[in-house]
Image: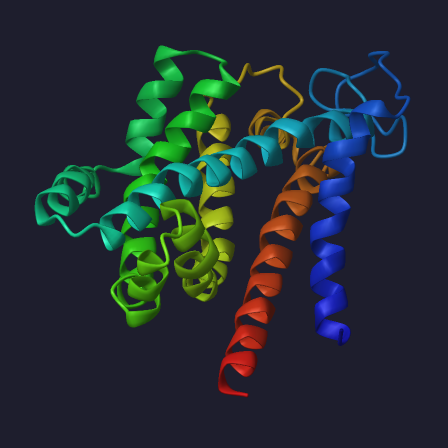
Length: 261
């Protein structure tokens, strides 16, 4: 791995480690003066230790986004594979046309409505972010899998009485790995943006939640008084999305090299 790869890995690993292991670390739960210099990174507008909030705020900030992408690919990927491999046009149309209707809907508006309806529900926001990504994921997987699903190899596997799951996941699924890898960096970034936007606008989690995006929103008025209360969580969000995009680009580049070798 070259220097760029190591930098990308570091940008992703640091926020991930903080999000996963941070809640397990001991932290100072005492409250002090608002926007003071007490502690490693000072205090926020409620007098809470900024470093302690960073340790516990990543679990929702990144967990919701990653969970949404996994769910979107689980649902949308399955729909795309079924639509690409079916021999019945009515099934293909029945699966894809309803998703085409959902595509023009503004993602942030849909998620905001869900967030307001199920106030402070991390699960509801995660599902909403996943559902607005399902149509594009399904279209991507279907388009990438069409050639492989209708090729002679699949016909030969069917004649050998291989199961549908063995064919789709074992052979056709491998043909979509390149496009999925290329899309994954953008998809993760979009999910982080949507989750952070809803929380930043005050429509998602509680305004006192330690979530990184909530911390940025709550403390932005005190940026000049205690900049770390805003910059620290914002830098972790940017670090994760930037590093993940760099790793996705590297994976796509490597897969192209293998394909042309």
